[in-house]
Image (cartoon, rainbow, N blue to C red; front, side, top):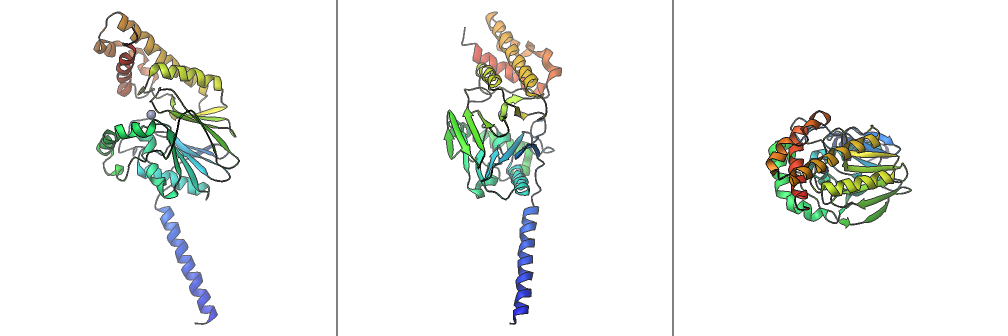
Length: 313
Ligand SMILES: [Zn+2]
């Protein structure tokens, strides 16, 4: 074979390989993300429960890019959403994904983890996350398949490989992330990420904006966390649900007012000998117009708070 022909074959086969790579990359369309600070990207989830229409894409998730690698923060409600998030990262940077951080156990934040297994990152979570995921795995997967059908296919739980409690510092290359775990609040496995470079505190579900806060841990713990968050005084925050561009102080105030109102009214009800059912039927109904998804979560919140507070008398 002459040299010229060999060169043509090489060029053609290289081109073909490139086409294959591109078509593989394009088969997953990238999740829409917004760069809210240099190198810090957030995808805004739907303000809803998981449905076939929104494909389980209901949480705010995203990633932070350093000079060495990328840290993902929450991965979405399905394997498919995780793959779309991975495609969004690949559209921004060729750097490897070295950390996948889960802020807590809820399905809309963890089921995309599996899409990143091929990157062999450390999966980072609260020391209590793994057991909490094990406990809920069966019911989370059953509900996911019931609500999403085949859209849930391939979604599995990938537990943390790097569990910690207290503080953990991760360096992704000229960019330091300060992780911390919190007392039981939204769940018993909450974690936040502070990006020093941009002054952004990724609160995830410790802050709900416009969407009603959901208590799956401890209302008293959550109120204590809110006081600490206020003292931390970050430049900006990323909430787990709701708009990412609203000022955080009024949003945190509104969340605190709702939770504190529940504590006040449920305590009074318990003191007066009110049954849990009556408390559920009557407390906090004047809050309905203030919060999205009120009808789905409010009464459950009242019963959770009642169960927590009835033991303090
Ligand atoms: Zn949550």
